Image (cartoon, helix red, strand yellow):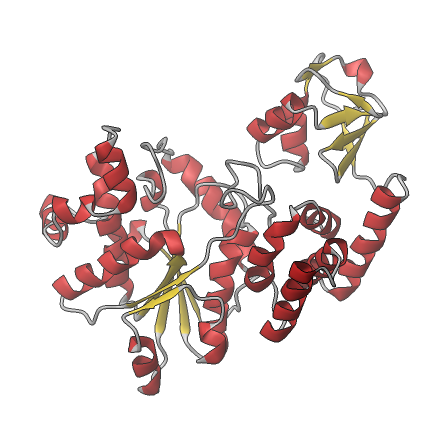
Length: 392
C-alpha cells in the first residue's frame, strides 16, 4: 500500500482500496483524459505516474481517451462555459497525446479506450436512463456550479451532462478504482452513483494534488502557457524548471520526482530554515525531472548547457535550423508554431506581446516581420528556446 498511497490527496471510501487489494485479484484502474490540447504535461503526468504505480503492482491500467467528452468540456473549476471543440480538433489532439503517454506508462498491462465507443452509441432512452441517476439539487451542490448559479453565470444543460458521461465511462470499463486530480473528486464520486445504478460495485475514488504551473500561481495548463511537456527537449525541460518561483518547489518535489520522501522532507526543511540554497534545490529538482524523461546523461548535459548559456551568457552549442517560408512579410507566430517551439500560434503571440521573442538580441515587437530581417538570424523565444533561421 505504501507506494500506491504516495502523493495521494484523498481515497474514498476510506479503507475500501485496502479491502479490494486484500482480495488478491488484479484491479481495473481507470484514468480518463480529455484530449483538448496537444501536449502531455507534467501536470497530467502526476496522475499518469500513479496509474503506472498500479501497473507495477500487477493491476490493469484502463486509460480512457475522452474523444467524446472532450467535445462537451469538463466544467471542473470553470467559471464559464468552455468553448466547444470540433470532432476533428479532438481527434488531432488525441493522436498527438497517445504517443506521449508511452513516456510514462508501461505497455502492459494497459487498455487504451476511446469513450466515443460507448457514449456515441447512446440513444435518447439511454440518456434519460443515465441522467435519472442524479438530481439538479445534487449538481448544484458542486462548488463550481454553485458559484456560477449564485453569480447568475450561465450553466448549459450540456455541462450538467458531463459528470454523468464520465460516470458511464466507469460502467463501460467496469472500473474498480478511478484516478483524478483533486478537482475531479465530485466527478469520481458521481461515478460511484452511476455504477451502483447499473448494478456494479462502486469504484474507489483516488485523487492527487494539482501541480502548479511554472508561474507558481495557477494550475499547470497549456491554455495559460505555464507548462512543461513530457516530450520537450532535455535542455528546455531543465531550463523551464529552473525558472519556477522558489516557493513552488514544495508543490513540485513530491509530485514530479521519485526521490524518497525523507530526502524531500530534508530538502524542504533546509529551504525553510535557510540551510539549503534555493538554487541548489532547484538544480536537484531540474536534474531529477529531466532524468525521468531523458535519462541521467541527458540531464547532466542539460545542466552543463544551462550553466554555459545562463551563467556565462553564450549561445547553446546546438541550435535548430529552420528554413524561412517564401512569404514576405513572414508571420512569426505561425513560424514558431510550425517549428514546434510553441504549442500554438496563440502562445507565440502572447510571447511576442510580452517582449519575450528577440532576433539577434533585438526584441521583436510585431507578429509580421519582413523576410529580409529574419534571414540568417538567431531567434530567442522566452529564456531557453533558440532557432536559427535560414533561407528557403
